[in-house]
Image (tube, rainbow, N blue to C red; front, top):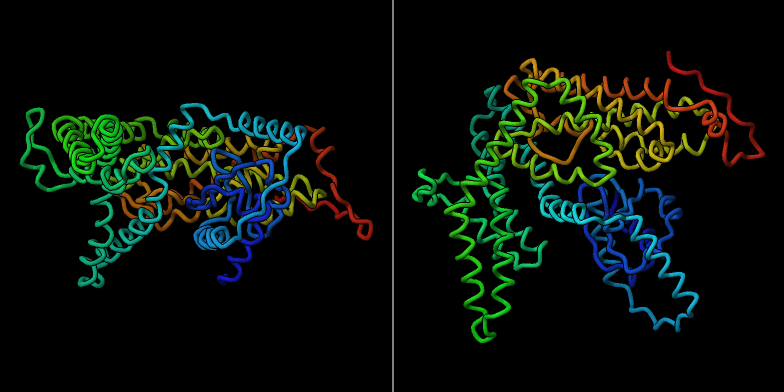
Length: 490
């Protein structure tokens, strides 16, 4: 897709979110353009959903427009440029009391709908720390997988050390990036957060003894970095309240690095290291002893966790497991929720042969669904219908149980990075039993998830009344007769 196409997409989106003066912030994650808005009542949501490149929208703490992997990274800078280049808006005419009252009501309803509880807000802030790191995790994870293939096959021995350095460099310093992003997210000076977190990966910490043992470089990992940077933010803010302005540039940075640095070396690194070890041990034991049941629960509950925003709590856990073992065993199981969603959507497609509008939505969203982008299917198909969302969870539970069972039988594996799922996860698979086994088990889990999601939705996804109400063309064309029902697959 050309840059002109991406600029055209950005230009189509901008007026539908209220124009440049309604935009307060712009960011993006793996699949979504995240926009801060002054007035959400100005968003033309139905028209926005009709933009060809838009796969769906999510109204959360930021307004999120689903564009899909790859596209979002290209549309976002074009969108930023359009906002930056826009001329200032003319002064608004005086608002009437009725208009102000209506706008206030709309804002209140939007705020209530978001249900921004303290727990969800905290989880979102933690997610904001780790989400910007995902592209580097993916790139380095794929390079690590390629390096493993070359090592096992004995090919290109001169290139293997170079690939190992490229794949490992980011992971060896990930604590610094976590510290930087943590300070930025919680209102501190980012570079001071990164400076405190850098202590964790400094080789010289091996000479320091805490709790009766010498520290190891990297001990505590991202959890220690997050805690150290948070402490640095609080120390920095405390210093700003009493340090005279004349010496603020000298005293505040010094104390912000020194005090949290000492706490990190003589307490936090040890504690965070023990927690990280505990997370790794628990994940291994969970799947080794109760793999099938654990997989069933994790795969079945992941879609509801996504709907509640609680899945963000798993991001630092995934990252800790990658640091600990080289891969996260949880992500392939959780990815089965997307497989159940795809199977459910296919069943809806065949159960409602006359509903052309819904079938069109499914056909356009399925390719993204197979690649692990589930929002269009969730928000456009299963969640609005109700019962198919539940049956999609059944498919995810079945796929998760399949993958968990093989973990229990000794064929454990995981993902070397977080972010992708569906078919996009194949290049990131790794495990002690070999890449072939990992690919076979993961593919089997996806197949089970598709099949179970389809079957559960076909037989239990609709009541007779739902079928009567939904299996009609909501916008029939007088020039054409309604299509005849397509036969269900055998």
